[in-house]
Amino acid sequence: MARVELRNLCKTYPGGVQAVRDVSLTVEDGEFVVLVGPSGCGKSTTLRMIAGLEEADSGDILIGDRVVNDVAPKDRDIAMVFQNYALYPHMTVYKNMAFGLMLRKYPRAEIDRRVREAAEILGISELLDRRPKALSGGQRQRVAVGRAIVRQPKVFLFDEPLSNLDAKLRVQMRAEISKLHQRLGATMVYVTHDQVEAMTMGDRIVVMLDGVIQQVAPPLELYRRPVNRFVAGFIGSPPMNMIPGRLEPEGEGLAFTNGDIRLAVPPEKGARLQGLSGRPVVLGLRPEHLRAGVPGQGRPGAVIHAVVEVVEPMGSEINLYLNAKGVVLNARVHLDREPDVNAPYALDADMGAAHFFDADTGNTLV
Image (tube, rainbow, N blue to C red):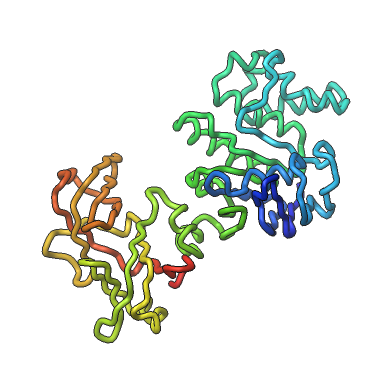
């Protein structure tokens, strides 16, 4: 296996579209790194440049200690798994998995050993004589992964491999790929637009927007300490509530205000926000930090009064979408009974878990 290093990578398409802007990133040997972001953020272009399917305008790509900018894709010692499986329909599963090794003129016994080992790892040994049309979506994806495994490459590249699967299969395949990484100890770079996939699979997550890396961090650090408003809003489902407002003096401390919403800022956060009184800010509260309250009760300086607009029962919890005089909120609560739509509702805000963002730059203040 090998580390992957990107140094100041740039890519601009005809028409002046900057897909990747000065991206620098190191993926350590044996690490599972996920590139995530909205459509058009540059994540797939970055992956394709690592694979050699796109040429970088500037910057360096290193696999191991070798700069591979001018190395053909077949000579980079990588294996790529695509979204559409890319299986040969006229070949059996066995031949699909063996084909790359056959082209490289590996000995027949070595090919057979590698194919059967990969099939055993992926639980598809009984499918080796079938053709792709006789396979389910999940089975086809396993074959595509198996074709990559038999290569025994230095680096595995995954380009949204689960996008064509149904929800249940996606969950299953997420676990399969994670177990595969643990078993092989391989270097893996995985691209997805699904932040749930990113959070559950990656050792580290790279969040991208408009061709620029916003933050690189382990999943929980990304969730708990986002560097800006975009990362905070993109990571988490349902997304973080973003409430525009301003900071005002309150006694010896500060309060966040927006119309009828007035929430006391905890002293430990207020100390880091001193000097920002009167400035517009954005308050970020995750849905689980808005708890079910009781109208007229609750902790002083922590209650938001709203009206229920949508109720989404999720089994062990309920997602509520509410309106607090024009401020749209979502809350994840644990209740025995669903609240009524259009009923008044009180939310108890956990301000100790709140985030504050600069209204102009979007950067995290605290």
